[in-house]
Image 1: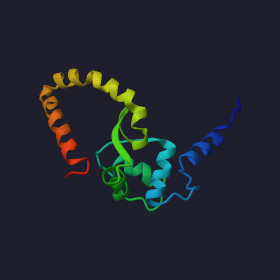
Image 2: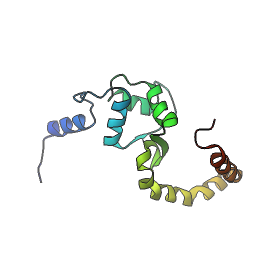
Image 3: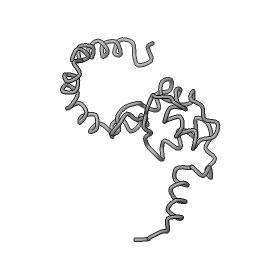
Image 4: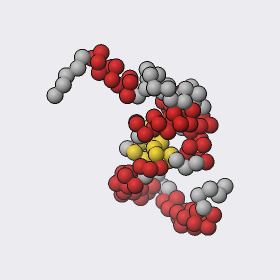
Length: 140
């Protein structure tokens, strides 16, 4: 086992997350590259200064803008907003890897909806599934 100083550890982490800007990540390609490395970003839609995902990407990728993330999520479908412990954004390629996380959350869906008096939400699932099957995922 190799030990390193706090300074070395700090340097390694900053380099890995591209917080030092050493790797010239730029635009949409830069967002895709950093997501391949860090795999997920917590998705919090609250926007006090900016949304968390935008702050994370802006710190790592030059020329980042909110529209880049929007395109990757909702136009190109390369990313998904879903669960990876918490609400996160992750690569669509990782969808099958996170099936166990979805299965665990599914176990608790009915009790949570019951507690919130929202079991009626389950009545919409068949309608949503039918719509997606009839119109595809790109329908507005």
